[in-house]
Length: 206
Image (cartoon, rainbow, N blue to C red):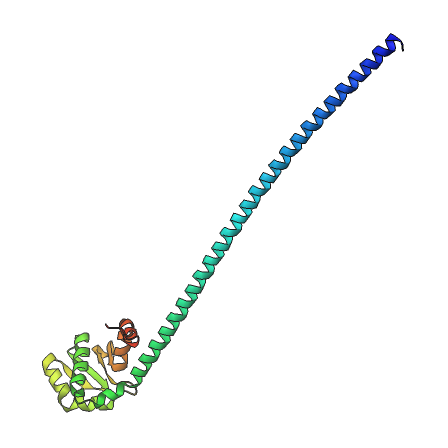
């Protein structure tokens, strides 16, 4: 082989070695970059997965808390509804039994108190009383006269009440009115008594 050919052959081999070395270097560099990209993508995926899981846990906890709060609210509402129905039943029963109070031996004193309270509330010098028949009999016997003297007020009687137990009083030509039937008194006291009545029903000490 001629020296020129040998030189060309040697140069060719050198070029191929350099090319292979460079190719291998590029491949290694590409592999390292690919591995870095894969690891980075895996880390990002893991981070994203963690974010998603944390968000899912937060949402689940929020929904659980909302469900518990909703259930507690519903239970409380049902409890209050049951309490109110029970109290309404108690007061309705009490209202139905009010007329039996007239059978008490001291009803004349209660009738006097009802009349005295109504006339005093109206601050009237002249008052017209309307009462149920039983209360009216007590008032006309002597009670009204005693209250009239005590309060220095003129007391007259109108038509008997068609419903209710107790009396109502009108004054100033009907412009002033005070309903002091036992039913109205119970209605006025009902809200303030509800808590105490419920405690009694539940067996609690007042």
